[in-house]
Length: 233
Image (tube, rainbow, N blue to C red):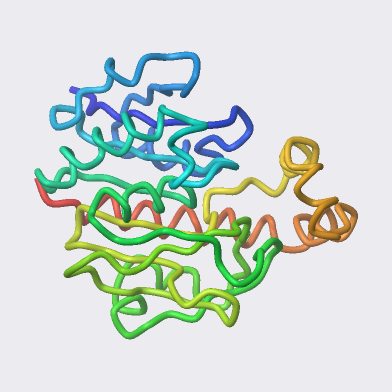
């Protein structure tokens, strides 16, 4: 019998990417819940076997402009309180951190591009070890504080809080290990205004994706597969 997985998607091109294959291989039937199109109330906060909150271009604190954030945060708050398997990527991780009572605010600088992460001792002892020396895609301007009781797993020079875990079932990642280098063009188009405002050349990002995409695909899938195997029922 297949297990249920729901991916909360905030913009169409920031999807499950290279993680879709190992998710299917692990026996999960995936359904996307597209914010602004689908009703978040259709997602069972506790009964769903796995929930993945994906990235997006808004800030957790922009609830007045984007009311869906309140509903998504409440959904994740209920799920996290039950210690149900939950993965957050970029905005998804920030919403998880906020749901756990941690602060989220703009960082000192935007971090956009491919670069490796440095793992803490806890990070190197778990699934993220597969990402050692592999440049991952960074694409964020906000930073989350560590939720109470969480283990800090990774950092970069630009952002000291790149990943956190609360036991085996709850994982928040500031970076994008799921990004598919072969589909980077959709990101470059979708985030064209942000790149221009930050003075970042899309040609450079396109070249980085071509150079690092295959290695990130393989390492990211290994990381995600191990995390899925180690989930606690």
